[in-house]
Length: 450
Image (cartoon, rainbow, N blue to C red; front, top):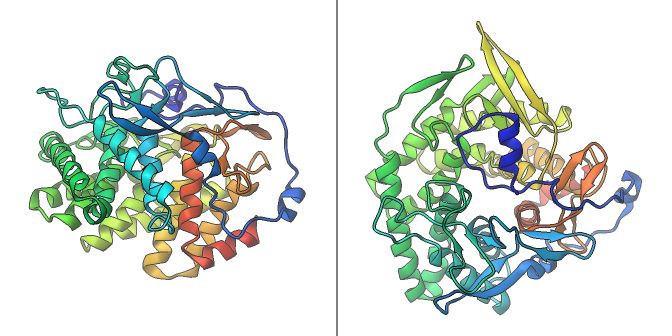
């Protein structure tokens, strides 16, 4: 099952997260001492697609279409591919991640294997869009079962076609891959454009004209016009797809929705320099969680494209103040706030599990700040955050192995690692290093911290 179940146990949340638990499947017991990690030789490139290739599997749908998939789970020590009986064996969430990763591989123009996989992964996402003439048409189903009859999981709560994480991630991927196929396969690009138009239309219908009202949760005022009311985590992924659409096909309605979402994310910022929680952008209602925290990355991108320096400033306040706080805490998994008078107080706090999906967003945000400002402190911060993957963490054990390309499923508790290596963990780790390798200063910082 997914990490959303763990989150729902720790605090009530209306959004369906659809993330993987680090504790459900068997856990390896071996540990590696930090001294050994520091001496370990690494390849010139940290990125290694070997395990991602292991997770990749072609699959034929009931309509005869061959698509590309990536297995959700891969269990140590043999890294057997495993399906989930309720959900399925693959999902749009992970396939879109894998597609975005391949799209930005530097050797994609010459690597026919990656080109073929990218095309098949794109086909899988397209096939998962709901076309029924009802309110969900345009949104995406998430999971596939490994069976020949009715493989699309249309009923389980983390798979129904709905305005949720998997639909936004499909949109981000399809809007980003559109330009590539516009050059290489115009017919496929036309289908992608049609899918993007359908989803954009329902996004505008469902979110474009929501009133800008607020509610108060444990004394904390939060907006009501984001997904599930105050889901800034989901809004950030929506922004990334909408920014692609804006750059490809400028539209005033799209700009309005971007502004709606961006202002809603800004409204979730709490505290500031010297004031807890130090500019953190809450994820939902009065709580923050590490996974899916792409708000600062998305705000910086949107702020640059739409010339909104106030959005960039909010993002950098989180990066400058909240990220160092997390580093001092040895990272956190989640916390809740409550407002007492003029003071924001910690209501609940969790340090574990820690997963790649909780670290990668911070790395991207720091690198985007470096890209936009050229200030070395951001390259240094990105390197320091990335060292979590190579053993500078509560388990004192690498969460990514450049020799195999495995991203491990997380830290369960201090000194205890889940050595399974599923799609989400692997791709989030690969994403982190793929972007890091674009910035030699960040790689140099990482080498100093690991």
